[in-house]
Amino acid sequence: MPPLYALTVHEAHTLLRRREISAVELTQAVLERIRRVEPLLNAFITVTEDLALQQAREADLRIAQGDIAPLTGIPMQIKDVIVTKGVRSTAGSRMLEDFIPIYDATVVERLRAQGAVLVGKGNMDEFAMGSSTENSAYGPTRNPWDLERVPGGSSGGSAAAVSAGECLFALGSDTGGSVRQPAALCGVTGLKPTYGLVSRYGLIAFASSLDQIGPMTRDVEDCALVLNAIAGHDPRDSTSIPVTPPDYTRALVEDVRGLRLGLPKEYFGEGIQPEVETAVKTAARLLETLGARVEECSLPLTRYALAVYYIIAPSECSANLTRYDGVKYGYSYQETDNMWEAMEKTRQYGFGAEVKRRIMLGTYALSAGYYDAYYLKAQKVRTLIRQEFEEAFRRFDALLTPTSPTVAFRLGEKTADPVAMYKSDICTIPVNIAGLPCISIPCGFADGLPIGMQVMARPLGEEVVLRVAYTYQQATSWHKRFPPL
Amino acid sequence: MRLTREQVLHVATLCRIGLTEEEMERFQAQLSHILEQFEVLKEIDTTEVPPTSHSVALHSVMRPDEPHPPFPKEEVLRNAPRREGDFFRVPLVLEES
Image (spheres, rainbow over the protein chains, first blue to last red):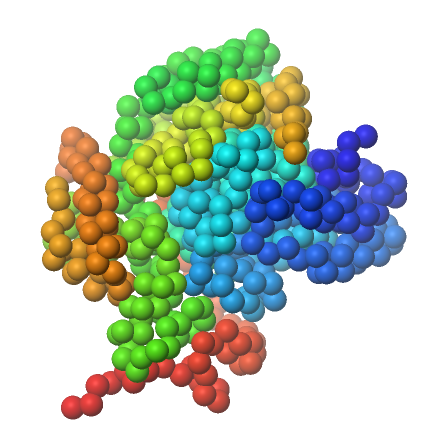
């Protein structure tokens, strides 16, 4: 048997149900693992050791009474942009260094209702803005597969923690790839659900029309279990879709016969590392041998997605982040009696460089005289990108693409050039623009570093996504590799 | 297109972000470079295209207007940088005439 911290959620659940292990033992194993590898990785902003042990004891009491849900007693990490009542939630920013939320996000409430155990809060790029976790005010997270490399971002702490055994699963948030790209770079499974399937109540807002919370796990089965817990309508989020989600574990069917899978050629070729292209195409061929019909296709508007995203996301962020004014919570500059000076200094010292850059970019794009040329134009192209996907999903059940154009890059490699950093999101962004469900799963290695493949489908097509990804994982073992830490 | 120093200062004022001289220069160059990347959108004719604000079109979501217990006052004020009694304390907002 692997060490307890390396179990999948479903394996641990079986052991807990059979009383072969207790939730306290499992939690202690994970906390011990955190103590050992955290000095190398920095995947947590806060570790909640005492709280975790208390919650684990509660889980054991539940289990003793025969009351066990799939996540009861399972140690989890929550990205620090998702608020947790009574547990500091910084969003990776100095602005919220001492911020103690007074309520739980809906997703946290639902996971806690099942008895999942919070071991801590995940490190991340400040306010989820970044692709490497180097924008965290709490220091960068390192990739468990190579400590000189980034884990991706913005949910880099969550991906690293799942990969290295510092939790059994995590929740990340994905605005332009922030669940999937770090999942790919750290060799774990990460799902961005359809926009509106998972409540955003309690997710500290970045770009409200794109933000979505998603599970980060060791395999597709765990992904379905966590999605079951968090999906579903929430009256506290007005963009939450009023549907009753299915039981996603029923989509874990090892069968892709007859499914039509498209390979959009714009996601291959120029700018894509050759090993990444080869790995994804090899995966597609494997699915073909398992009975899927695989065909190349074209999404010509893909090349405009980056520009659309980097107008819309900063515009929405510039509005959302006006709330950080030093009045109700957060960092507050106090050395002046002048209101405007207090506000400007609060934001000058409280925000890091990337956040300031995006607020300014968004403010510019929304300002008088530029609104039509930037924001409105981007929203119109957004319509066309959505339509192009709709068209593609008339022909295909799912599309396969690389998750990241390259494997994990070195720390510091892209920090001086924002545009180079933004380009690491080229494969993940289109999905957020169209609101589609999309999973990233490990599909190979290059020089010892994980490669990720995306499976995307039409809105609310999570079951197809899970089925394709599950079938692939049943036939491969990339997702079972553990980093040599 | 290259942003002028005045434009950067104007934007910084609009979003109330204080900048050092060094940040000012760096942002001027970086924001200009980012804006150049957006030029590509001009290639697309969007005259007849409606804008998309949300990928899932839900409009005017209504719920019954039922009272719920509010958060306790002490809890709400717990994160206040400065408070006075039951209030958030702020610098003088109205300037004296």
